[in-house]
Length: 164
Ligand code: RP5
Image (cartoon, rainbow, N blue to C red):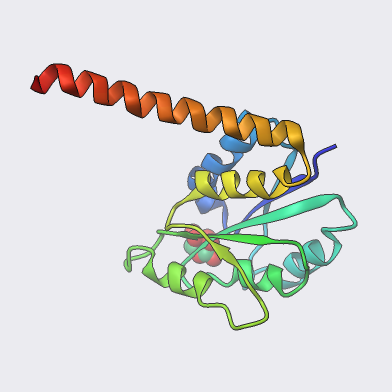
């Protein structure tokens, strides 16, 4: 049985962006839970969730937050599960604030940070981590890659017709 992925966001205002991670997990049939926890507004709830995540059957945590985005790091401090951080563009600084707050973790406390607003990639990376010990999930990911390759090759064939 594949382990669950937690999709955690700092605010309900992050949900439209974080839906991209949920959609990808659904596409891959990976069990998940979605939560709002904030490193600043609900620090105890965030810490409790991360502290219990292994016992509660999670394999990877995805954490998306904007502005002074400490959520991924705060969760990582409470668990040895891999934590994937999504810096969210939600401010006048174009997401650079969240990117630096998420990616610049001190040594000994890693957060695997994806691109600004990279919710789909965060879910794919979580799936790849779980696929290390799940052959059927690994096969699904390979099939998705083959489909992606074929889509681009088809676009190239169409382009050749236009510019021939
Ligand atoms: C962060 O502050 C959240 O992750 C969100 O991206 C940002 C703004 O939150 P709201 O003021 O919209 O609740 O904590």
